Length: 272
Image (tube, rainbow, N blue to C red; front, side, top):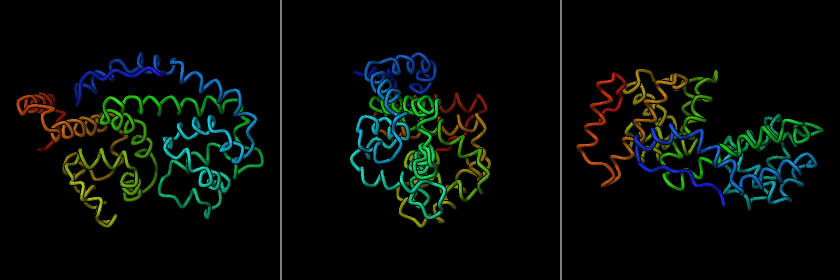
């Protein structure tokens, strides 16, 4: 059985606790029997896997591979997974390049079955590369079992800075945010956008996201979130707004105190 991360509070106070204890909790989670068994099996077997067919034929290996990219729920879609991996990522017409879910593109690149004569599975550092991602993603899932907002906040710290640092255009970055189930949820909540925004044309959505980001954070460009302070503000606003929207989870007095404390520190971006 895996270690269950401890999240004793909801909202921003819970996030603060999780950050203070993150290193110890991650270490305890990674050392748990279930995680260690899966990792030992992956290290032992993955170097002998040369094709996508062989990978999908070993459910235990496949579960770790998918888990490293947040694709755990797709474990039974073997035909689809094999097709994506077999076609690779170098050909512009490959399925991985056409999917809106870029996690499959990342997985396809990582394994290299359709891109190279010899896949990347034979590299000496390949197990460490994949298992590092596996531990991170599985810890997020475990945290989410206690508090899904914390899982979303953790995923944001992993995904948003990498996206923000890319040289893509501002609009392209918003497309990526909107296309990500985790990032879009965080941004919708933090920016105070209604869930119905998702039913709009994607270009209309971009305009709404950009306008709100400019209003609350001083810029419409997602590149701003490569700045640690901006990322922290976004995370805090998401957690506070989410907590306020949950009936009974935080009193109006507690909310007011939190907002006033943040405002007095000069780091307040949440506009109710």
